[in-house]
Length: 365
Image 1 (cartoon, rainbow, N blue to C red):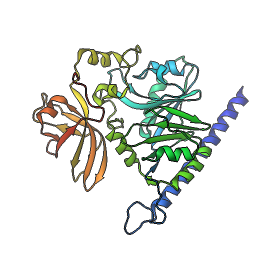
Image 2: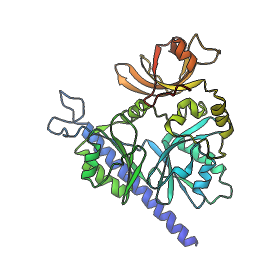
Image 3: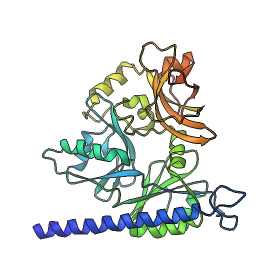
Image 4: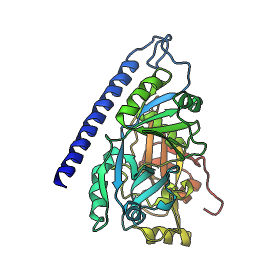
C-alpha cells in the first residue's frame, strides 16, 4: 500500500512538472508572436503572418483549478456551494458560489465534471485561501482537494469562426452555453459572450500541440481580453479584494443560473434564501464605463448623495482597460442610487452611468 501511494505521488509530480514545462513553452510561443510588430498594426503580427481567422487565442493559466476527488465529492460540494451539484454532469457545467456563514461570497466557481473528478475554476489568487477553508469541512468525508492548475491545462478561443476552427481539429463546440463535450484527453466548454467562445481543458501532452496548431490561425490575446468578454456578458469574478463583500444575488448569480433555491442546506443558505423570499434585494450588479487617469480596481467604493445610508453606495466587482484612460466595469450598486443618479467612483471621482447586463432584470426584481 505504501509503495503504491508513493508511486502515485511520484506520477503526480511528473505530471505536474510536465504541465509547468508545457505552460512555459506556450507562453514563450505567445511572447514570440507578440514580439513581431508591424508599423501599421498593433496586433503583434506582420501582414504576412496575420491569420485569416478573426479568432483570438488565450492562455487561461491565470485561472486556478481545484480538483475534488473521492466517493463523497459531489455530496461534500452540495453542502458547500450555492448551486445544485446534481445538475453537473459529463456534458453540463455550471456557475456556482461559495459563501461564508453570513452568505457572503468567498468565490465564484465554474464547476465541471471530467471523468471521475469535479473541478472548481476561479482566479488563481483565491486558491490558497479556498483550499485551506474547504479542507476544514471535509471531516470524515471521503474527499480530497488539491490544486490542479498545472495538471489540467486551459486555453480559450473566441471569435465568429471558433466552431469551424475547432471542427478542423476534430473538436465539437457544444450548442448550448456551459455545455461540455469530451474528445479523448480534451474537453471543450462553450461559454457565454457576445461572440462564440470556448474553453479547452486537457493534459499538457494534448493541449500543447493543439495550441501550436490553433496559434497559426488566431491572434494572441490577453487575460484582460478574456475578462472583457466576461464583463460584457455580466459574469462576475471574486478576487482577494472583493471576497466577503457580496451576497450572491448582488452579483446577479440567480440570473446566471448560479443559485438553487430547492437544493437544501449549504453554507450561508439561510441568509441567501431569506433575502430571496422576502424580496429585500437592494443592490445588484450593473455594467458601466468610465474615464479616469487612475485605474479603478475591484473593491473600489462608489458613493452617491442620494444613498439612504452613510455607507458606500456600491463597489467595483471587476474592471478591464479599454484604452485612453477608459475602463469597462461591473459594479454592485444600490438600486435606488442608480435611479437617483450621480453615483461616483470614490467620493470625488468621475460620475458613472449604468446599464443592465445582457440578461436584464425581471420587472419584479
